[in-house]
Length: 230
Image (cartoon, rainbow, N blue to C red):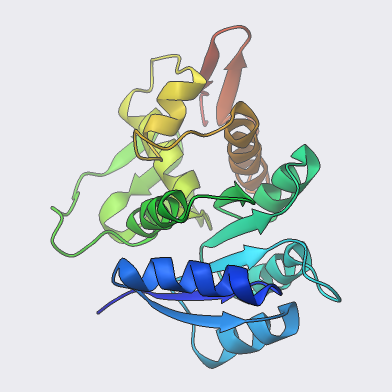
């Protein structure tokens, strides 16, 4: 079945360009013009991913994502006409999976959508990873996309899960930002250092909430390494 993508942007031309590019890549799309319509569309039929413009009037994309996260972990790709760092950080901290600044290349947007979809729900044709990973009280099961700490389930986005898996496969290594993101993004996708930091911050916050304050440690000037997770 083709993936269903919800595209929320108040600019009809942008919506048309995005929907055309995604449909050309074999996906089905639904376009809406505002945040309220986006929430209603998700309620009627849960999409596989939401492309969400931050700068919509009345209810902006950040508020839409905040409300979505109360009931849904659907992947979110943010769009913005401004290359503002605060927008990127807020969007990722609210549970967004990636961020694209307008004007954008439709091909790059499709590539980023495909990366997120692969991480969120591996294609059936790909080999199932039946390995189990554990470190201290942290446990990951890639086949079922299940993560837990000391028996407490963790709600991780696809990108966050892949980053943690990258650490657990090399628990004794210090990973620089490039190595961290290589576990979560395609090699031809450029990801800013601030995006890496935002994902790491989100993972730390979610683990700290269940009693693990040291899941990822910073090695200043080098990168990051897995903590004791005890």
